[in-house]
Amino acid sequence: MQLTLRRALCFLLVSALPFGAHASDPFGLLGTGPGELDDNVATTPVQAATFCATCHGSDENFGPKTASDHLPFDTWAGTMMANSARDPLFLAALTVANQDVPGIGTFCLRCHTPAAFVRGHAAPDGSGLLDGVDKEGVSCDVCHRAADDKALDPGAPYIGNGQLVWETQNIKRGPYSDSQSPLHGTVQSSYTGSSELCGACHEVSNPTRNIVSELGQDLGVPFPLDTTYSEWKNSSFSGGGKGCIDCHLSRHDKDEPVCRLSGQPARPKPRTHVFAGGNLWGLDAVMAADPPYASAHAESFARVKAATQKLLEQSVTVEITSLAATATAGGVVNLEARVTNKAGHKFPTGYADSRRAFVTVSWTTSSPGGPETVVVGDYDTTTGDIQASPPTRVYEAIHAQRKTDGTLVHDRLALHNFIERDTRIPPEGFVATLATKPLGSINYSNGQGGYNHWDDASLSVPVPSSLSGFNKLVVRVRYQSVTKSHVSALVSANTTDQRGTKLAQVYEATSEGPPITVAEASALVEVQNIVDAGADGSDGSSPDAGPTADAGPKPKPPADDGGCGCRAARDGGSSYAALGVWLGLALGLRRRRRGKTAKEHVFSERTGVRLPPARPRFSGRVSLSPSGEPS
View: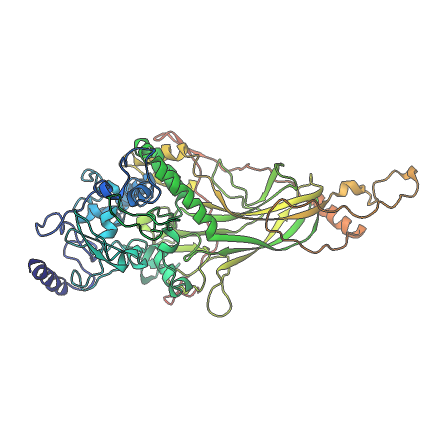
């Protein structure tokens, strides 16, 4: 009776508020507000995940060698969900955001530690009030007490900006109808495993900034910070019945109970709580920032890292679609490759200011273990830059603050209002909005008003002059969940605490977040070295040797040891005229020195870290009309 009366009163209160406003939220957002759980005797406070581990974790859930491979706590503890409030990159960005827009940090903490928000602990800078429960990030209660119950809130569920509606009582929601517990009530709820629940925090827009055009026109749409949910919602994956958990929460390979108490039924291949995502470097960063926690949950971290790598490799493919079977050393060969997005959202997605993927092309010997030379898309480990010439494909979103004089400021998340470019690959069946429309040099149009979920890349590939015979050309898609330029910008911008210094230390301790390979294809190419034919165009034989004998058939290519298996038809050999052309090209080309750059570094006396210069930005500009079309 008391619960029914309270819910009725809540309904009347919410109905009396203007749409889009919350009585206790400075940004006018909805959902359960600060103090509405812990400060009310009729409600149940948020419980710690470590308490849930009593039943849903292994016997010694803090031991590094006892974690199970299926129990919820054990598989969750090493995820970015569990560590979203410990992430050193987030904490450094939080400080900079609060410097730029005082008070915005409370908004950020709605998603990075929802428990802290509803408990009234979400101080803007995320310091002081956060306790052990708050630092558990997206913990058990966050998802299992999240509700779409209209009796709790007539507008539930809400999409975006952490507007979660919490179950007020000690009731946990989940997928099973027969769950029982001596410690809490249970309710079966499809919302717990829905993409809409994920969309509460994986769809974020700045409540203080709208998108502006290149001319500074306010387009009336809140600036997007993370559009993963809407990317999925406006793709064929949504209509095809494939949701977030189908990729990010894999099922266990056999039936297991999800509670370790005796007498609990084995659930049919239950979903683990690994929460594989795209932030592979973030896992290393958390471990480096908090070694005791990393040691206590070493098995969980290892499991999550392996699942994350596997998921990234399943998210994209590359295939060679056109490549000549022969090439001339010192020349250039034209390559066409298709990079296909297999994910249910853009590739890459999520934290736009830091994540990117790019294509590299290299030459190596046809036999395994030979030396390899990257000639397109080489990554400079010193500067963090991608080789600019010859050009390659880079899949990224670049956001900026457009000032009134037209200048752009990057890597200041809370101030951004301008989408400089977005070359990330759309998902299949994508329908764009103003906030998610592809922008930039890569054309994804399918010619019918929609978008392809692949990129057909045409690349000019230099052929090193040292090559001859059969060599393997290797095309890779490389991925980074953090860029050196973004880390450097956060370190430099931090002036009010030590989080920038901590981030710099963690970044160095984790090998500075190098790119990883997520897709690969290869093909054999016969490289003809013009030196072997003689500088005068002859076959290279001695003039005193008399007529040359028939050398017999051309050598056969060695057996390939892997790759995509692509093969191009041979063109039947080269004429002397063609060799002359290639000779001219060879003499006109200079081999690029790998890893060299004329860019200077800036040494930060405050942090003792050598910082690279700001990354080069797209020189073109795309104006947006209110309809979302480039103008």
